[in-house]
Length: 54
Image (cartoon, rainbow, N blue to C red; front, side):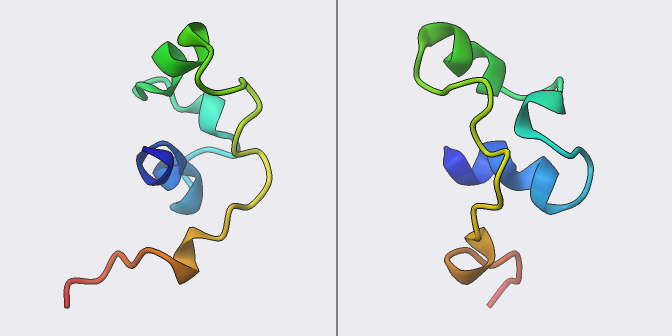
């Protein structure tokens, strides 16, 4: 789930995860799974996940 929630930030669509209105992230914040400021620092997914089809 972290990758999905951070994707709009990674691709420059928003500055913070919470700024993307179409995300299920907001539901998880309400449930207490994530803090509202989660993902404000660079997570470094580029090393772990690739957007390229191999």
